[in-house]
Length: 305
Image (tube, rainbow, N blue to C red; front, side, top):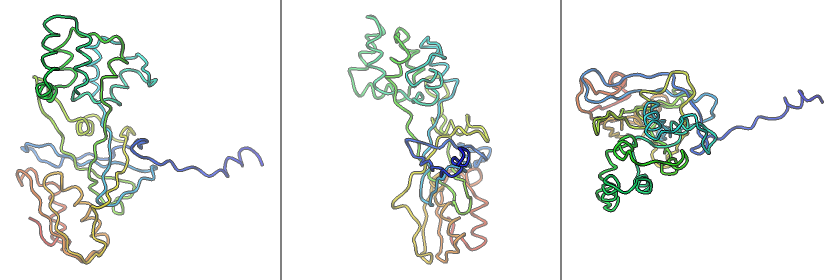
C-alpha cells in the first residue's frame, strides 16, 4: 500500500474543545438590540461554530475569552518602557501575550505588593505602603483602577523584565454567556445577547473585558474568538412538552428564554409559555421585541408581560 493510500485510511481524530482548549470561532452577525436614546448598549452576536463539533442544549452557556484592546496594551507597554516585540516565556511577543492572556482592565492586589518592591524610598513609596497596609483601603483603591491608572500614579516603579511584570497579573478568565438560540433552529451557530459595559474612572473611558472585545474588537468572518460550551445540569426545558412554563428574564437575562421559545416552537410543544420581561424603556430597550410579539401573535407565547 502506498503512503498516500495509507494516509487516506487513517481516521481523523476529533478534537475535543473545552475551557482548556477553546475553539477559535468567527463572528458572522452583529446587530444592535437597543435603539437610539437608550441608556444601554445591548447587542446580538451570531457565533459560527462550524467545524468545531461543539453541541449545546437550550439552557447551556457559551464560555468566551475576551481580549484586551490593543490601545490599552500599548499604553501599558509604553509605561513599562519595554519593547512590545520582546519574546516572553510563552514564546509570544509581549504585546500579543498582553492582548490575549492577562486581565488588564481591572488591577489585582498582587500588583501593589510588586510595585512596593520596585519603588525607591520616598513620597510615592510611602503613599503606596499606606494603601497596601490597609486591606479595606487597598480593595477600594484597585476597584476603580486598571494597570494604566496604577503605573501612571506610581511611575517611579521599574520592572526589571517583562516576565517580572507578567508574574504580577491575573490570567484572563472566561465569561459565561447564556446561549440565546436553539442549535436545531440555527445549526452550527450560537447566538449571544450581550450588554456592553462602558464606564469612566479617573478621567479615562473603559469597557468590560469580554463585552468590549465583542463590541469593539471582533471582526466579521475572522476566527479570533476563543469559545467552548459550558453545560448546565439543571437549567432545562421540561421533558414533557405539554408542561406549561413561566420564564422571568430581565435585561439580557432574556437570552436563554429566547432559546427556550425557539426550541418549544420547533418541537411543537403544546404547553403554554408565559414570559415576564423587564428593561428600562419599552421604546428603546424591548430586546427581541418583534420576535416576541410574533410568537405571541402565532400563539406560541401565550402571555407576555
